[in-house]
Amino acid sequence: MSLGDAEIVIIGGGAVGLGVAYELARAGKKDMLVIEREYDLGRATTSQGAGLAGQVRSSVERTRLAMHSVATFSELEKDPDARPEWHPVGSLRIAETSERVEEFSRLEATAARAGLEATRIGREEASRLWPAMDFTRARAIIWCPTDGYMNPTSVVKCYEHQCRKMGVRFAVSTALEGIIVRDGRVEGLETSRGTLRCRYAVNAAGAHAYHVAKLVGLELPIVPVRHEYFVTVRLDGIHPGLPCFRLPDAGLYGRPSGDGLLLGGW
Picture 1: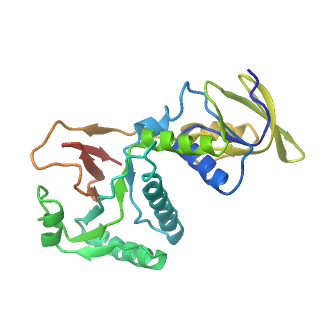
Picture 2 (picture 1 turned 30 degrees about the vertical axis):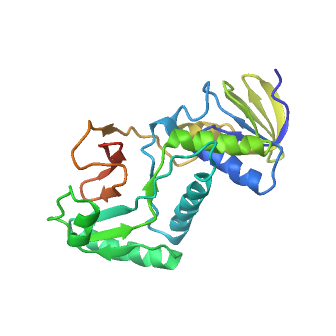
Picture 3 (picture 1 turned 60 degrees about the horizontal axis):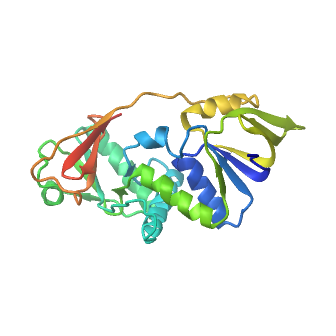
């Protein structure tokens, strides 16, 4: 079956690619095709995501982008047919060194400029929010009540549901093989299912974005890295309503996963 031409082709059917498709469709772009080389959407990087949505960032622009994501998840959660499984439980960011305390002051100032509620709280308040955690070594704690976590796979399915209603087309098991460029503009794509014409191509290929960019002579300064997290068995005192948390001095993050914990490092 022919893929058909499209004004916009999004290369990569993960959470980012479908998020782009969703926003463009909402902005009125209807002639759009998402291609994914796996047999289903969200099978690569997205399927391994931990699902945290933290809005406290080092720049105003990144903070506002994260705020937009949270607002989107909150809105999508209202659809009874396909939800992102959004849990607005808040988050705790915990500093254990004086250098990190200074960084937290800068993060708070950035959050304030972006219009994000992110406040410094004491150990007693943190213990009330997370009774099972020992905050003895905490030297500063930032509480962001609108942070949370979602299911990355459900986010993709939710985006797909909304996009299909707005006329976006999808092609899985479709590998990109080449990009046709003329006079500095993209004119089409060569895929494992044939050649198609397009006016715009969006590179949302995640860990493979570097290779997609190389097809048109661009050098993307990205390097894929391996990452691991694990989910514990059921633990006393743990429930889905507990906040997410980050301990940057230990390179550790975590969130509830049912009655257990999802824990990972960076």
